[in-house]
Image (tube, rainbow, N blue to C red; front, side, top):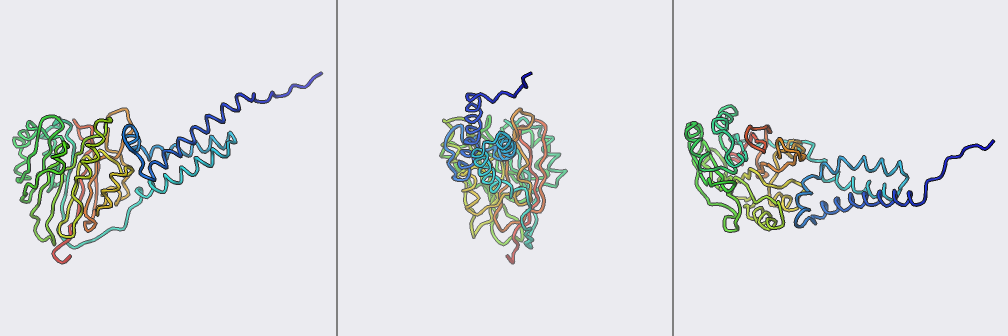
Length: 330
C-alpha cells in the first residue's frame, strides 16, 4: 500500500510568490527612501507622503509575512525601510523638554472653516469656552465674517485683520490685542489667503506676529508649484520678532517642504507635546486622517497645552493651544 506524500510547491507558484513579496518590499524601501531623502516631487508622491505613519504601522505586517514565507532578502529590505520610517516618525509621539519662559500667556485657536460653512455662533462659543485670545481662520468667506460680527465675536476679540474671500480663498485673524495688517505671504504667487498680522501683546520681549496659514492643496500636478511656493513664502523665525504660524498647511511633518520650514526656526506644537500622530483631516471622510493642521511656534515660545477637536461643519479639526511668550527679561 503506497503512502501519500505532500506534493511540492510548483516552481511557477514559488516564483510568483517571490516576485510579489519582492515588489511589496521594494515599495516599502522606495517609500522610506523618498521620505528620508526628501525626494517627493509632484503628484501623487506629495499626497502619499502624508501617510508615512500609516505605512510605518503596516511594515511589521509585511515583515512577518516575508519571514513566514522565508523570503529573507525581502524581509531584510522591509526591516530596513521600517527602521528608516520609525526613526523619522516615532519621535513625534514623545513629549520634548518643556520650556518655561517667564512671559505673558496666549491662548490660540486655529480652524479651517470649510468654505465658511461652520456656524458663526459655534465659533464664538469655542472662543468663549476656551478663553481664546487669538483666532486664525482659513477659508473664511465674507458671509462668515458678517455672521461672526452678528454673533458677537467682536465683543470677545475686537481686533480683526479680515482677508475673507469667496470659496476657499479667504482667511482672517481675530485678537483681543491690537493688530496691524502686514499683508499676505504668497499673495503674488496665486496662493490662498494667508493674512499676516502684528500683535501688540503687553510685557513681551519682542514684537509678535502671526500668520493664518493656508497654501494651495497639492491635489494635482497643476497645484504642486503653488503648494511649494506658498510654504516657502512663509516668513522665517527671527531674532527680532517672535512669530507664530497657525492653520491648514496642507502638509505633514513628513514632507520635505514642511521640514524645511521647521528648519527655519520653528517647532510644531503637537510634536512638542507628543501629539504628532493625531490626524486633523479629513473629518468624516473615508481616507485615513492626516496631520496637516499645525501651530508652529518660535523656538523661544513654550507650548503649554494643546487640544484637537472636531467642529461641526468643517472637514478639519480645530487646534486650541496655550502658549507662553518670552517676557521682557528674555
